[in-house]
Each structure stands twice: as C-alpha cells, then as structure tokens.
Image (cartoon, rainbow, N blue to C red; front, side, top):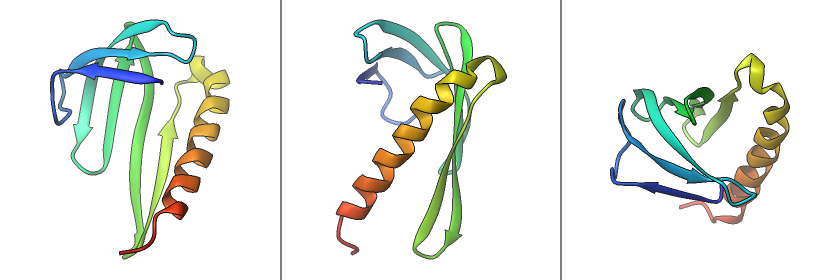
Length: 96
C-alpha cells in the first residue's frame, strides 16, 4: 500500500477508510478485528484481506507475520517483500 486515509488515530473494529495500491487505485477498507498490540484483520474492497500479527520473541525481539487468505496466495509475494522492508528499516534504527 502506498497511502492510507483514515479518520481514526487508533484502529478498532469498524475503523474504515481507504488505501492506495501501488498502481494508484484507491480501495475502501474496514478493520474487522483487533487485539491491541498483537493482531488486526481487515477487509479491503469487501474481501477478507491479510491479518497482521506481532509475536513477542524475547525482551528485544518481535516476530511480524501476515496471515494471507487462501484466495490471496499470490499476495504472499507482496507480503514477503514487505517483511524484508520492515526488517531492513528495523535494522537501520539504532537500539535505544
């Protein structure tokens, strides 16, 4: 996603807005489930989309995971690239 428009500062079930795809198409989204600090799921353009999960590993490390619905298997390629980018960004930031 290239951009997000949403009126809420913190997501919760029912939060809605729109996201801009890499090809410039804007799609509506709705957050369907949230476990604060751990997981969230959403629907994009009315379809169940990826779930997002944080799993504490130890005091200094967290595992990030995407849950991809069966119909979105090809999207797993995009998720993998996103995880690589998150890893790169996380490793560029000096530890506090």
